[in-house]
Length: 220
Ligand SMILES: Cc1cc2nc3c(=O)[nH]c(=O)nc-3n(C[C@H](O)[C@H](O)[C@H](O)COP(=O)(O)O)c2cc1C
Image (cartoon, rainbow, N blue to C red; front, side):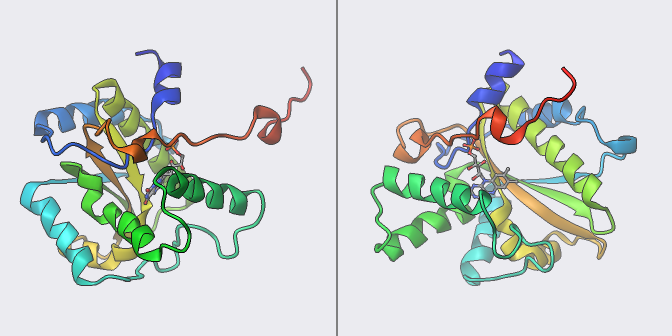
């Protein structure tokens, strides 16, 4: 698979088949992704991979305390998101619920769908990306490059993914569960597995702003 195809065909998969992923395959994905660049070659990332009973225990943690809000000061979005970001965020959510035929008024169905996150959408493997709290914005960006590398290396091996920042809601609980030292925190999760290609939610295709909305060319 060439890089352009990989970049354009990676999507957030939100329904997985239960088939397990061998640990060798997960290692293979990380083996490739670890070549992601980082400033000063700090490689400011750690990964915790969970499967089987370990993964189920994490889901149980979320079930036991619905509505947890442990993001702290590193929230997923800035407060009072402004345009054009507010509209983009709204649109992807509405596009998904429209595809699933879940209207705005059907709050219970929307909540059920949202809670699928905490089952890793049925994926056999969950990854948690951990960063040292002392790191700055640069290192967080570099961790993002690493995560995209994981997603692309997975895709090349027929393995689908969905990044899951939603796990910040359980940031402190997860830190305790994993026994992280005080200086480490979970940034993001990722569901990993084989896509359920029959699931309607996986037909969702997000759009992107055209180049001239975000790029300017000077001195050409
Ligand atoms: C860092 C990061 C965290 C994300 N967290 C979640 C999440 O918690 N739950 C979810 O369903 N999607 C999550 N997404 C998926 C985004 O909604 C998705 O990437 C975006 O809408 C573009 O769609 P695409 O990934 O299919 O191209 C996350 C994406 C990124 C990059």
